[in-house]
Length: 135
Image 1 (cartoon, rainbow, N blue to C red):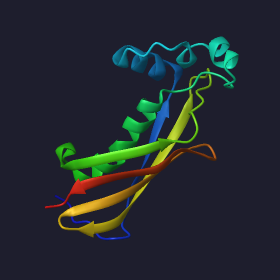
Image 2 (image 1 turned 135 degrees about the vertical axis):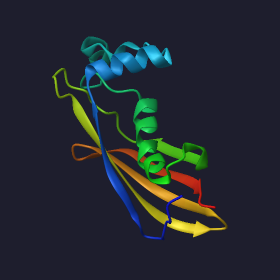
Image 3 (image 1 turned 120 degrees about the horizontal axis):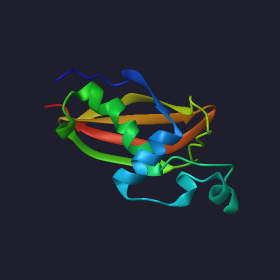
Image 4 (image 1 turned 90 degrees about the vertical axis):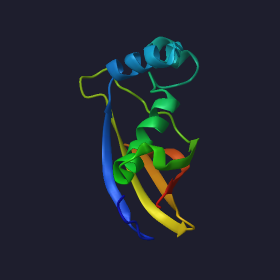
């Protein structure tokens, strides 16, 4: 188990997301909402185009913590607020979500970690935080 200190920044995580990623996640999650694969349907409800699933964005973000902790079973809680969808252009590159995290508190064997997630210049998660066992 790595040692954590208050104020410590965890290594940044860059996660690419393409239309292919979104379609595969649709199958895995059984969430076949058309906004995740059809520009026409996404635009019909006011979105600029296809967007990644919020739960994909949330799940991908926890990896910044589990990579640092080394053992996913040490995660005690995880919370996010969705602030903006991740727009996934129909290109080979798609989009990239950048996750960073910082230890904000350590008490009674639990480290609290604040997580940020951005795509381009936009925050896509708000109030994201995890608690992990450090004993």
